[in-house]
Length: 235
Image (tube, rainbow, N blue to C red; front, side, top):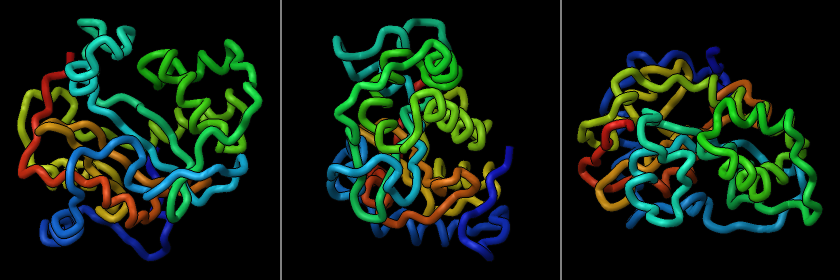
């Protein structure tokens, strides 16, 4: 599935120059490791369905599994699964800030909903957590939210050169490969995050209807400032 760019007149990016990528990524790099959604500035209580766009967060699983210790999800980190990029979440986002935990009512998650989640999330525990924190802000029921997460995940192509890991790359090169692999994606529609010299996440902004990529300059606050980062081998 190919996504169209949400902003009209963006055109094809196959010929995007390294200079354009550098102009976006380098000057706005944030200090320190970016935690989930710190790029938006602040969280605030929101009404379900009241947001501006989505952020699709793709975590590099080997970094998570190497660093979380006793807190890590063993279902995700079991040896031999061969996981590289995995779905962290689909996050409703404002132009400034983001909503979270939008409902005090714990809506039951049906087995049908969990079956949909299991197609893209690396573990059931993560899927349930993401529903409570972010899915409740989507305005969707659990089954529809997990279906939307699947649609968003499958619409983004993981670059062939990044699937296996086992390499060191500059963050700009990671961004360049995603831009090249996804028609309509521009560097102002994504961010590359890192921690302690390792890739942690790639975040991509999607329109609220999930029909196209959309600009999200504020996302750049989460960009990695390391000259290069490690992508440990998928395991």
